[in-house]
Image 1 (tube, protein in one colour):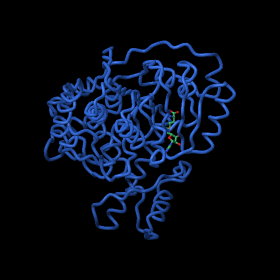
Image 2: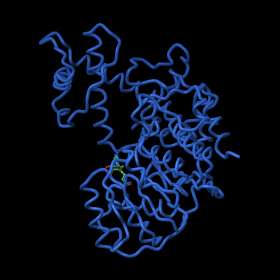
Image 3: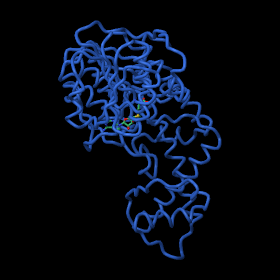
Image 4: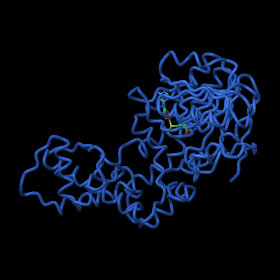
Length: 407
Ligand SMILES: C[S@@+](CC[C@H](N)C(=O)[O-])C[C@H]1O[C@@H](n2cnc3c(N)ncnc32)[C@H](O)[C@@H]1O
């Protein structure tokens, strides 16, 4: 019996029914998008101070309760997105293994390793980077590791580190999407992928399932990095959903609006309001109401002011700005007003961030269940260590481990 399909179904229903609150681009709107359907909600949003917004961002439960007036499903969505932590096992590691690994990465890796069962199988490390995780796996389980990585220099660095520590690790310099990489996936194996983006971790799950690999554990990230135009559901269950997820929608789980420091907040305000101000100006000049995205900008350019930003953006978009007659002060102010609106629309979208991530995670979990696997889903570390802290573990024909609900 599927553990995850009831959760998936309910999330699917609530996310689909409430699409008007999250499936849109706040950047492209020049007023609160609920102005005609939910004027009271807009009124409430407009009344919020920056401090109140910051508090709601930090307290998802309070946000869900406050929004319940207009979004009655909000508290249930919040509850459905709560996830317990997986049981962690302290695993002994030889000294010196952490040399050259940044502190937070080390914490992620050791926590990920601590959440993995020791099945005494050879490991496959998919999209290994320098193989930091692989070294921890080889050292703490005393089993061999094959590390597949696309960047030659990372393979060389990883190989050198493994050699120095005398660990049984073989690097394969290869493209995870290349059919030739399939030869490295076999049934007597425990495959892992820590933070392999979008299609990269999906390709691992699909191939492990096709080859009936004994175990696979992934921590997904960057759901929007996919080759297709829109999300391609994995499980039969998700294929029945009416929800169509664009790449923009798929970015939502990663939009953790952490309450950044004063300097970062100021920098974001300048950049975003410049972009929105330029957009308002180009709409005016083109006599259209269509959003015009502008590429990434070197932050130093923002110091030259709004007019310089507009000239740069116009050049990037092959647009000619009239030499005079543009009131840059006015358009900058329009951008600042739109910034405040975007912040308020993003606050509402925050409610759906983790529920959408859980929908994506349960799609993966259901896919593995449908392929005959016992699946566990839980967190392997706290959010400050990494916000992408979910681990999906699937074992062919074994008992699933029940996560511990901590809060
Ligand atoms: C976010 S990093 C994660 C690295 C490592 N798993 C970790 O957690 O430290 C993703 C890695 O995937 C690799 N990668 C990207 N595309 C790939 C591909 N097509 N085939 C194999 N590796 C790829 C990148 O070079 C990068 O090292």
